[in-house]
Length: 296
Image 1: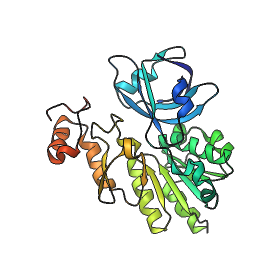
Image 2: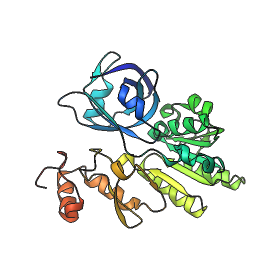
Image 3: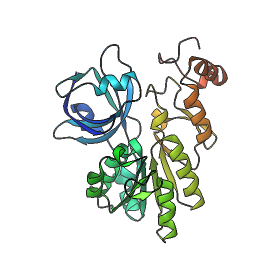
């Protein structure tokens, strides 16, 4: 069992939890994720790693209420325990690898974090800061009530630009509009990392392609099982079939077929849609994770 040692409400329907998970804390790196399960009847929930403390043996996750599973998890309190906490899963961020550090130090890097994407952006920015790489961050949300980790991000980033769709805090507009405004002011970047809702990453990638900025995106939003078996995170990258949970979650944003990925995301919400995808995709669809139905 994995006890919750700290719980903090970050915003409406968004909570932070520190989980005592020694083995995961010992091995995890920025960019990776975990699979959590509250109890025997709870569903498996993939969550990106927001932070970790190797000495305290804790891993920090951020949970937003989306369905019954996340609601059950958010209703837990300090002292309660999760039944499963599996990880680290997925590939670590290439920017946060010491073998690439000297090359990374030569780049001017921008992170664009949308909504809950702030959580997986933070550990990458923190790791880079600790290794002598200062980066800029755009944090975008619908409104100020959904913003979190502003002070924490400012402590590890060179410049933090906050954008809200309704103008209730910082720049009035979304992250793409803020990036375009910076570009119009003469600010240039060598690398962009965009993490957030699918639609946000799609339009960020479209903009950065026009601005000729190589861009990495994280395809965490389409994951379900987290092992490559269910097929929910199957996507096309540069014309090749990839699975976000085992091949990613990070990919070249200019090669991802976002339209197909978003269409799959919608279809997976219905039994009919899941059956249709399984029929169309055959052996490349899934190996039977329990979410899709064995004969679909």
